[in-house]
Each structure stands twice: as structure tokens, then as C-alpha cells.
Length: 114
Ligand SMILES: [Zn+2]
Image 1: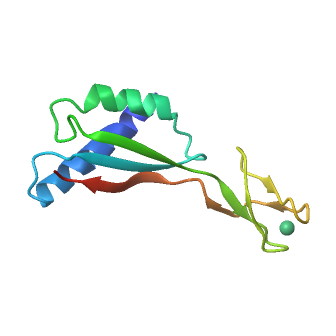
Image 2 (image 1 turned 45 degrees about the horizontal axis):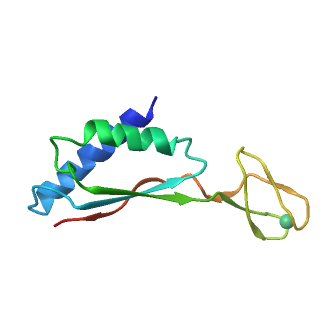
């Protein structure tokens, strides 16, 4: 379950940000996770519940923004929503595209301090 490692590094980054802002805790954490990032959001929330207590994120609200996958067609330049996988077919002209423009996000979008 690599979600534990992801959450551990997110909490490390949050701890550093809290120190930087002179805060002892954070009130809200917004993560942005692309649907192609290969992260199980339930497992990530579970890891948060397990790892947050005792740190600056203890008691903070965790929000996860899921970013849908989008690819751009090299032939007709259309941008289209994409499912799972690495090769996407353009719904306009039928060409295949590996030019992924969104969906691989994995990081902290925003932190709020009390
Ligand atoms: Zn196309």
C-alpha cells in the first residue's frame, strides 16, 4: 500500500510548512490527486487517519480534489477526457494520443492555518 508512503511525505511537507508559517497545526489540507496518479483515495484517507495524530495535521480537515485525466490530440488539437491507461483515442478524429495534459497530479494544493 504505497498510499502510506505518499501520506507520510505529504505530512512531512505539511510539518515543514507549518514551521515556516510559525504555526503549530494546520486546520485544512487540500490534496490534488489525478485519476492517473495510481492512488487509491480510500487508502490515502485511511493512511491519513493513521498517521496524522500527534503531528501538526492532527484534527485538520482533509479534502481531496480528484483531477480527471485529459489528453490532447496531436492531429486535431482537441482536448478530451480520458479513462485509465496510457494511450487515449481522440473522440473527434480517432487518432491515438499519449499527450496527457492532466490526471497525473499528486500533491498538496493548499494548506490553511488556524
Ligand atoms: Zn483528434
